[in-house]
Length: 366
Ligand code: CP3
Image 1: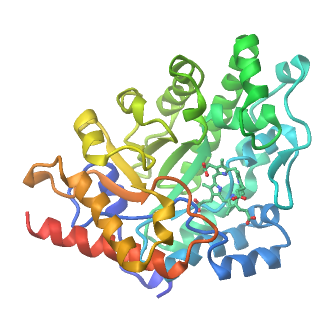
Image 2: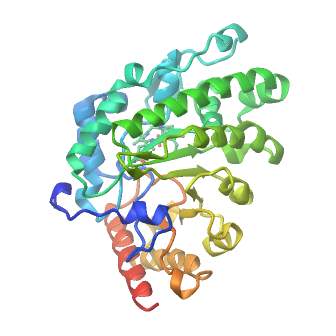
């Protein structure tokens, strides 16, 4: 079924706002990606991953691909978190098989002092065009999620110059020159606010901040160098557009131990990786925020009946803390991190269908 042929479905937005829903909505981090043969075909036509991100028609095409295969309850803009540092002049490229890299990583003080936040409507115009194009194509079928990296996670790539096993360069700066680190984070936080607000104005109906490397920080450093900047971003975000609330999700991978602190920064929902129990998380945050997550992406490699059993386990873990009247309230099902490129697509269908059927049944029984 093409997305626009579907009835309008805002279950995802209602779950984020902890309004009653008939079933638990589901979407998957990296749902458009290399595990889908049709994605690989479009990427081949584009010539590269970055060309795909920079072409609004093709970005729209791949955003919609998982929705025509699976009954997902949200679409996520096809792009990457590293387009922001690219627009700040660092020169993003993808070396074959090595992941993202920057031609000009941030190492020298004079370069860092000269860093400025880009105008998203100029330097990231292709993202805004993709958002508008995807919204048109979705035609209200499911909501569109916009996103950004957190300042800390972006800074990791900006200073390291690419992925890192131990964050040695960026942590050396954090401990030795906290003033410089804070300067990078301040400019990047401004860039993220402008970028997310521009996405909202272009049509994003919810936004998510990916703090993928927040969990690599010490207890004290997390608050000072990651959470404080996400708090500022959340405070400066447009929270409604065109008369609709625009919910905001914050996801720190490895952040389960800081759950209460994250829930207190003013976001609508907190994303959890698979190491935290959802029922316990709910007891800890009460009704302050919705929760998103948290199936281990590797569970998708098991046989279909095991995939279904794990999906039910995640749903039941959330319900384990709810009173009957609150059933299916405030949970968005997702993976605990991005889907692996080796995932069998058939198992994704089993997952999505099980989330819907099992949560419908449990809410009908309430
Ligand atoms: O969720 C979605 O479907 C939306 C698209 C999306 C991508 N990247 C597409 C992508 C989103 C939300 C991201 C976020 C992102 N990018 C993060 C935060 C989330 C996370 O995973 O923790 C990070 C850290 C990045 C940086 C990045 N981009 C890396 C490390 C890589 C290489 C990953 C790998 O597996 O090789 C990318 C490339 C990337 N971004 C791909 C996709 C589909 C694969 C590119 C390809 O087609 O070769």
